[in-house]
Length: 205
Image (cartoon, rainbow, N blue to C red):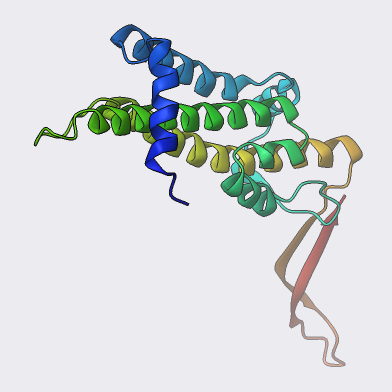
């Protein structure tokens, strides 16, 4: 949905009163988004996953019917709302970290866009286009894309690793091994050994 130019101008004026267009504040916003991205890696309640990932390798995950988390659903959830996949997998703090980083990137992008529109509205008589706010927009857009992709990949890993922990804790991991079987046995009246072939089935709980 397009935002009217008047609304963007008012929005930019409000931020301009607080001197948001100077270089120092842009640096502060950049530091803020970096902090939010780093924070999403650790989270407020991510101790469970942080411990589990040191023990389990997500690439060795084998799906079981009793697994509490669905990695595909977690990844799709984080695609639409960054951090949601982590939250539904039990890592609320980690998910809120990703969500906060995504919101922060959106705010930074909005501020940069408002500055760009405002600077060009007051210089409408000039033939040149002002680039004020463009660096801030790029920081927000690139940061948002990184957070979104990172959140999807991380949500899948969190679901798999926590499922592996659940399998070990509740002892419901099942391994099924099928291998060919060949033996010789005397099943004839002539006393000659005949080869016998089949499959060997091993089931471990």
